[in-house]
Image 1 (cartoon, helix red, strand yellow):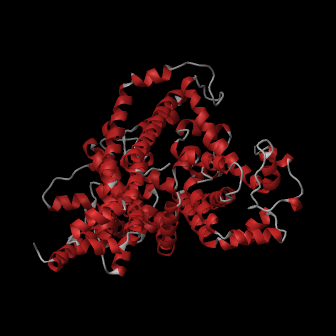
Image 2 (image 1 turned 135 degrees about the horizontal axis):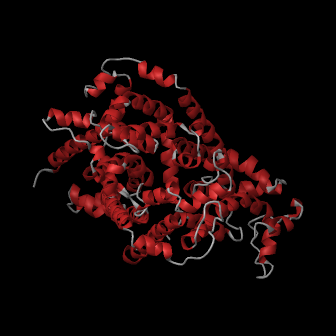
Length: 290
Length: 326
């Protein structure tokens, strides 16, 4: 048998190599796409671009920046994200607070109503008909309302509210505060951490979403930027016009796609280092008390 | 219940404080609860409305799978047609193709995307330098935060005929491969991009579970002469078993709902033979071709299988290892 210290060192070495590979494989596509976004179309086609821009130019950025549709869709994304997040936060907070009250009669039923929807959903077609029948198409409500409560977020918030000391609320109640007053003036100020986490969860998910808009918006000037990007990609990979021309098409817009990908991901990449730790703790909180 | 809240609303001053658990008589229990907690119940009204309208109404809306639906007509369809649409898709060759594809993609995702985070978490756990560990974690979480559209975009760019992968193949003297157009490559591409996007994030819960394992157990194992592998086998893995089981059940539950959005973004008519899954077929039949009842029947079939799978997995897990979701 090999001496423990030696086998341990071998193991550490192998481990280091594997983890380095993980980092490289994860980061390479990002580095490459940024390099492409600053490169010349000819160099991209020749496959010369790897880690560093070749034939450096800002032409593509200029083209995308001058596209009014891109900016309109970018603005739509901001608008949809803000409205949807506000709606989602109000509904989630209210319900989570109610569910956190252990003495409440019918609490089990209220929890069950929410949790059951995690395992069984109506399916695409009934949802589509419902949103259409309600006349929500082509409005922000088609995005905000059907996704107003994420049950996972709800359970995380509920767990947090349950962990608050009950004495505080009882004292406030004796001082004459109503339930609404307690929620607004005692509970929420004590819950800044979880509220911030939930706002982040919702903001990122609405910022990243594309399918609701794709499904329920009929005009391109109503689309969020994710759908703009999707159409760019689909147009170039031959979603509708597969055939001989596909390979050529995919080469024409390579740098435009790269620029759009970079610009769409940019806000997330920028806030990522600051918010990551909230997400991680939020997920673990949700896991502990699922 | 939510509607009767307002009628039973006394002025807020005379509420009883919570916590005073008086045992109410069975009949008047609800009335007492409403009088005492009407403000709490009122906070639940809008969220309940959300669940009823946007979650439960569509479940009921599935009856159009058994009724003839006409665009512009009632959301529940016009008249009963029984199992007509079920029989229709059971005799539809495309349905069986997408059914097979769903099983393939779901199975491959389960086989690869379930164990990889466990291995990665075990490797990360062995890193002693905290800064290094944190760096690797931060990098591996990143793809999880990006829109699936961006992930699909990156995947397509990497695999394009002029992309880095083909460039590397070219250097090795290999002909270029048109990954995106070839049905034979779709499953590899799908599972690969899924691993890229989810593996790091999947480690979070395992890493959390690992920190809860008692150090004394390792100490005891070392004294008993266990080497590193035996420690992992006898201490670490049993320590994270409840987490593994929980996530396995969840993975089985989402088996049928394989990455609808990702498939929709990555596939094209050339790759339909391997890429088209039940949910994308439902989308094309229902939303693009307006055959709502037919598509709803297929969608319902998919949802029921999903529910059966997760219930079975849960029961099995509870019977065999004593851990379950509910």
